[in-house]
Image (cartoon, rainbow over all chains, first blue to last red; front, side, top):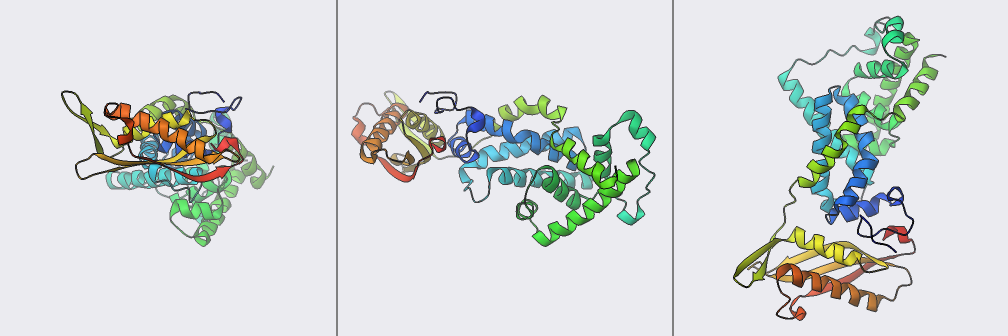
Length: 196
Length: 148
């Protein structure tokens, strides 16, 4: 054994190898180094999710900052009933919804165009080819989805959460999640087809 | 490629994508989060010329570091119980131990390390360490050293 930045690390064990449950337990006991590993491990995904849900860099920063601060203070109460990753997504999704509510109170919402009303030529292929790539086309298509289907699709297809985990994160049921995913996929396929 | 194939490819790109905004934010996130206040009860300590108060979260953090120095065990939870006068009544260290480790000597070592840390932190080194009540509870054993 050797002592390291984490109070205890195993000889030859990289921080990446330490399981989430161990990191959560150590961070709950005020181990800042363990918390730093949690942030490095899950931060990119939480930011990626929040960025596409909020579509504003400043709101995303605030949301992710607040989510991790909430996680730090709440870790002593984290009982491990769900995985650390799901728990962190639940906190972040809650912050996202709060941010969206604040935005709704202070600004006019962007209109959502339902699937059957989508102008298939609104995403100009030439313009996309010039200034953006496939990823940008996907981001643009995601922006057209309402928050529920957008969140469900991101959590399932990009972050790999199960239907049950998504329902837990979103505070809804698996059948609602299934419906949201169906709607999101249909819309996104249609938009990518138009982009082509 | 049709729309479905394009979506599959774009999804794969997004899955592997790290936003530049995250890279810029990462250090700030850690610094700001660990400054967030964790409410915890005060514990009364002793100073030669006055009173000393230590947040129980600070005491727990120091005991965690001390327990981390004991091989083949790790703290699962550390809890402080205080009297109505905020004196430390009891400190409980719940452990996970490596499978096969003799538990009695292990618990004794954890107790010694925790008690010494409590005494140092609260200024109790004189009077004797016996005044610090430390309970050790082995809650789990694991054959996997990564889980310590």
